[in-house]
Image (tube, rainbow, N blue to C red; front, side, top):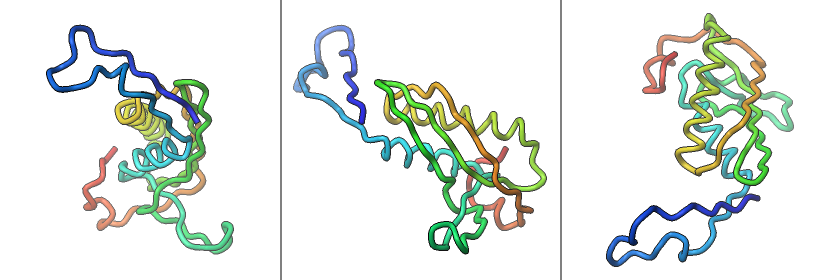
Amino acid sequence: MTTLVQPSAPGPPTAGRTDPSQRGRLTLAAQVLEKIAGQAAGDIAATGGTSGGVLGVGAKQDLSARPRVAVRLVGQTAEVDLDLGMTYPTPLRSATDFVREHVTRRVLELTGVRVTRVDIRVLWLKRATQDHHQTGRKLL
């Protein structure tokens, strides 16, 4: 787990609000960042994870499932590992760069934790169906 202490904003606190430095600490578990990073990666239409199965046996490639994520927290920084699948054909280098940037930005926006590294393993490719691109997810 990591404890974040946000610096207080310059100037006096807003009327009726407690100064941020007086409210207490915020502690985040790595699992919280894993959920946020997985959701951020899953927001992108060209990515997916696996669903079903027991201990990986019988799991199916699923473009609507969240990718598998592992996070290592060190202080106020994190390293993220993503295991995901992608639609075919997708330019993998530019797509993984986009995933990396999106995950890094969303984790920082939602938690204040700076992501210093995102390692991505593309485990499978699946031809996208027309229905998949109409889900409202971000397109690459």
